[in-house]
Image 1 (cartoon, helix red, strand yellow):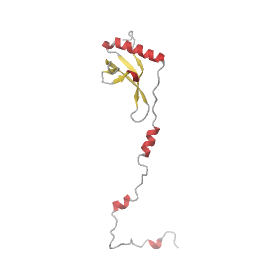
Image 2 (cartoon, rainbow, N blue to C red):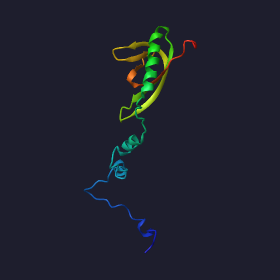
Image 3 (cartoon, rainbow, N blue to C red):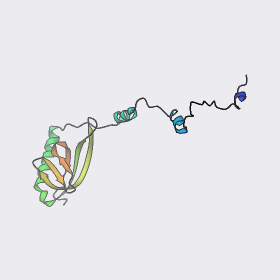
Image 4 (spheres, rainbow, N blue to C red):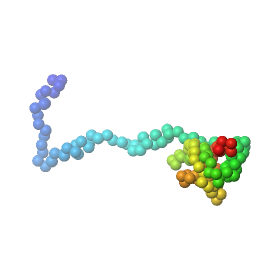
Length: 139
């Protein structure tokens, strides 16, 4: 028997009177890849995505934050530039990330206990890790 099937190359495809040939797009579709676990790759990627956990402030850090926030409230009319580090919770999994925001605080919303910046960014005090306010001598 020949190894490269030369004896078969001249044969034509069988044709049947009651069965029409399959259209080419349908023939190609039967060889397309099969994804048995749809979304599995996305789930693995989401699990592998790293998030930070919320840091519990020590008593000294809470006191420092309170001192800086009180100082900010005293000079709020001067509209100082403030740098705040705060926690943003992740929408899809437990944890989040810490973000730095530098800008001018417009008002303090005592009802929501939040700082509202001039660009309408709202940062809740309970999410803050630190707040850096320039010294009066720096102005």
